[in-house]
Amino acid sequence: MALCLWEKNHPMPETLTCCQESCFANRLQSEGASLLRGEIRTVQLNLGRLCNQVCRHCHMQAGPTRTEVMDMNVMRHALEVVRLESVTTVDLTGGAPEMNPHFRWLVAQIKAAGRRILVRTNLTVLLEPGFEDLPAFFANHGVEVISSLPCYTEGNVDAQRGNGVFKRSIEALRRLNANSYGRQGSGLSLTLVYNPGGPSLPGPQAALEADYKAQLLQNYGIVFDRLLTITNTPIGRFAEDLQHMNKLDSYRKLLDLSFNPATLANVMCREMLNVAWDGTLYDCDFNQALGRPIGGDTPLKLGALPVWETAKRLRQRQVVIGDHCFSCTAGAGSSCQGALQS
Ligand code: SF4
Ligand code: SF4
Image 1 (cartoon, rainbow, N blue to C red):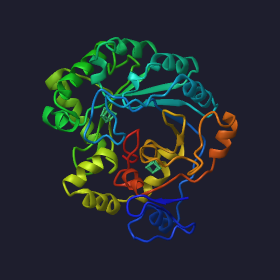
Image 2 (image 1 turned 120 degrees about the horizontal axis):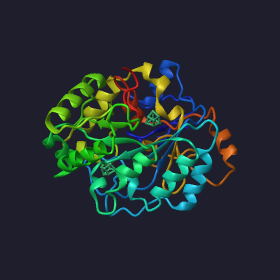
Image 3 (image 1 turned 90 degrees about the horizontal axis):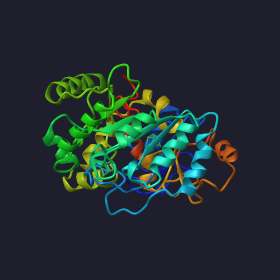
């Protein structure tokens, strides 16, 4: 069942007709398109809302006082999904996923299962007491590091992520480089993530990557492999911030006007399964943040069914959509793997 999230927060009729023109469900219908899930290729595990930062744009409203963290029971069920034949990649996110007390155990289990492991780090956590060995731990386990750095200038990063975050991020990147991350031929992949500081779409990914590479090398001696651009979704703290600046409606309008139907074929929810800290299943992290689980009023949870039955139920199922989906389909498109079109 499609849901109108921005204006009315009510279930949409089966026909997908709508009370407003700028509605994602309407837009899909006019394109003759639908979002259907395929096989699960990527399992994204959100290990909890605990984080050492409190960023202005955080869609998860994460922070140091949040207590929701995935326990080992949920992790064991999640590992059954990870071992499904179709799954190639496990994407660990949060919060700061490293702050989950079972993080290292989980990484070791995923490595033993032979899956590609991505860790989304905020960088500054790598400098916190008790976490300093993580770059070496990542390298020993072949983890691919994906790290947020929304600009190569101190002012922009600190404005979005907090005072002092840029300097600490640079230090963390140096430590990752010292452990061979981002070095040619090392096989240890270091990816940076850019998202705009305000209500605009990201620029072209390739051009920004070239700028980042030149600036970070020249000013700080830092190397990395690739840059991903991600469009901010107007939910959570970012929506509150825009509302405060009276820019929420104009940003939604921008996303709507920038709708690009060519991105629909590649949106991440087609092949990704998102698992919340409590084992509830979602089509993506944004749906998780909005409390829109797979199964609606009877949410599908890990452990409730045999894993093969869960996978079967998900196959060819309609994704739970809402107007926040405009952020994945605007311009060049956006996903956890960056732009959807070059
Ligand atoms: S955006 Fe990332 S680093 Fe910032 S508060 Fe949210 S989870 Fe933490
Ligand atoms: S927000 Fe993006 S990933 Fe999530 S359901 Fe919508 S289109 Fe799919």
